[in-house]
Structures are given as C-alpha cells and as structure tokens.
Image (cartoon, rainbow over all chains, first blue to last red; front, top):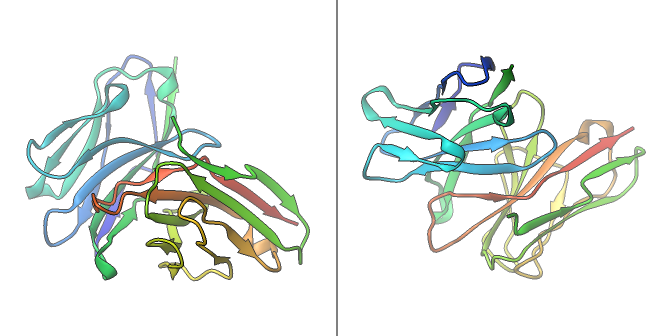
Length: 116
Length: 114
C-alpha cells in the first residue's frame, strides 16, 4: 500500500521569499504524483501532476515540483511567494487499486502562512 | 472554474436529524468520490462510485450512505446525525478513461452536529 508523508505541518515565509514544501511517498513502482492546494473554506484545486517523462513539472500559479525517484520525493517549489499563496497544500499519490481504479492517498497537508 | 457543485456549503443541525449532502458534476465523469476531512488529518475516502448504480465503501468506515442514480449526481445521506459526524465532506470526480487518479473537487460541505 502506498503512503505519503508531509513532514512540515506549518510553514511561515515572507512575501517574496522562495518556498519549498516537502513530500515523501512510499510505493514500490513509480506512482502518479499530485500537489493540491486548498484555500480556507474551499475544496482542493490541482496545482500540478507527474505521470511520467520530465521529472520537473510546471503547474499553475508559478509552482513547480521535482520528482526524485532515488529519494522518493516530490517537493513543491515556488521562487517568490505572494500573499495569496497562503493556503494548505496537500501532496497525493495515485497507484492502482482494486477494481482497476487509481487509489489516491493524501498526505496530512502543510499549512503555509505568508507574512509581509 | 469548478464544474462540481456541493450543497449546502455549511449546515448546522441537531442530533438525530436526517441530512443529505448534494453533489453534482457537469463534466460527464464516470467516477465520483466522497472524502471526509478533519483538521490536521489526511483526506479519508468514505465512498466511491464507478458509474450509475455502482457504489462502494472507501477506506474509512462511515455510517453514511450514497446513491448513484444519475451519472452527474452522487448524494450522501446520514439517517441520524450525531456530533461525531461533524466534519468537512468533499465530493470529487475523475475521468474513468484517463485512470490516473487526478481528482476534481467540489468546494466542500461543512457539517456541524450539535
């Protein structure tokens, strides 16, 4: 069974600073990997996804993530954070489940606070 | 732009009441899901459906029930709400052919049972 670990529960960065959110997964093969963002009181929105190919993937809102097989990681980065990026970020992994559908497992999330 | 809609967004009710959380999507997706989300916890899958007349239990046991009579509609029902049911419920859908696990979420229904 797959699992996802987001070691940072809460991160605070200054506006304009760079950001890296960590995600480690456990799965025997190469899974499908996702980052979702959730603003307060909202559902989750897909930021980016990795299925195969180039290990550096670009997403919406200026985010990118790098898949590192050797480290079982899929860290999310942004070079310059904006106040509107304050939200909770969830890493997720999809792997084949029963019945032929993709079982998606989410991490516990990292809450990002942006200070002036 | 969300094409999956949940109502109500917020609901406060008393113990013992029957509630139905509505979820509709206009993307024609075959697969639909209900997740339960509590603060500081991962999202837990409580129900899913492959298509019309298909419903399955998820990883987290739930006293709620679901139905899938139409492709676009996947309501969740609690026959007798209790304070332990207080949580946020997120509906999602995915495209069956792609089968990548990419999910499209609604904005959630936050339920408080007094």
